[in-house]
Image (cartoon, rainbow, N blue to C red):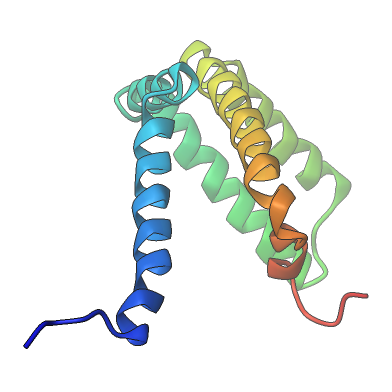
Length: 134
């Protein structure tokens, strides 16, 4: 008695291979210089006391502004203060490096997304954005 592959078993092979390829792609992305630069910049920001303090300050002001906006009490001065705090955060050297590295990585990931999506004839980014789009 021989064991033959069943049609059901064969159907799982493309899915398994696709999963394997996706994992390989993820590993390859982590080897990209842009990804390594981003990871290093992220670590630098996470370990920088000044950056962490400024992030907390910005997040607090952003929350206060959002609450004021929801209650109708937000002013243009509040918005300018929030924007100034964000600018100060972005001017910290480790944060500026992080934002640049993030932008470079996002550009490469967008290029990869376009390459992967091209043969699919489906814009997953648009579909993931919500329903009822024509």
